[in-house]
Amino acid sequence: MRRFVPSLPALLFALGLVACGGSPKDDYAEALLGARAAKDVMLRTSSDSPVPPDKRQVELPLSYFPPDLAYRVPASLTPDPRGQVVRMLTSNGQLRPTRVMGTLEFALEGRPMKLQAFAEEGSNGERLFVPFTDATTGRETYGAGRYLDLDRTPTGIYVIDFNTAYNPYCAYNPAYDCPVPPKENRLPIPIRAGEKAPRGH
Image (cartoon, rainbow, N blue to C red; front, side, top):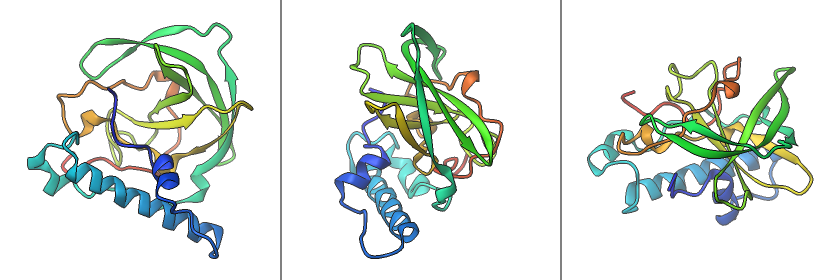
């Protein structure tokens, strides 16, 4: 299994934290911070946590950039016409079969950007996996990159929210084998949103 902790978008929905009555910016920040706190609780208390018990005091709570709606952008998915399966390199040097679902196109800082979206081979493709690196990788964020998850839509229109970008399990525990973002998914700008590098890295 790649991960057990629900993604932040899923936590936002499950916890019912999308507030009403305040400004959209304040409501969003409140919901996001609540979901992050819930994830910390899971990582600290779950028997399946990827964070070893002897490291939880140091590594938790996780470190994040402040919520920033500028990193929440619309995107369109151009499906891969071949539905090809590639062999994605992992942190342990393995090659994991992964299906290319298409290319997400969006804009950040007024510049056009692209990221390939994938699905685990053998899955129903209803969940898109988007691993990426950017100009913060290896400095402010984890050296092997970060991940995004998106629920598949029938329209091909998405919202990419980099505030929900998270580290792979191997950031906390080298016993895990994690997909490495392909070179096509390196963004040329710094993405100062989402999870930062674990403490001590």
